[in-house]
Figure 1: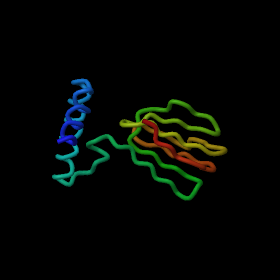
Figure 2: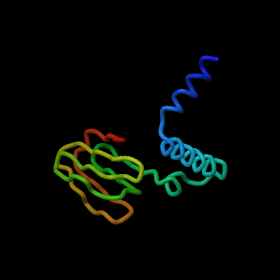
Figure 3: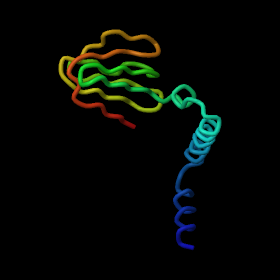
Length: 111
């Protein structure tokens, strides 16, 4: 009985908006998975493709937050994407995708 109580208590402490957001997300994910549809286009997930440590392709992003030769911070549709390295350069970008070149040291996903 304690486990059920804890679950209820944790759920009770969350706001109504937080609970509704989880329900919406769970519903969307369930539909996408059951119909075997691509998650990236329907759920807004970003796609990051890294080729070695020299090139990064990013798809499904909203905008550029920070751009220096050491750090490129992008706003994804569901999270922020931080690309760290040396001599980073945006080769091209469109509303949907971009190519980054340079010496890539790390990619971080920030909530």
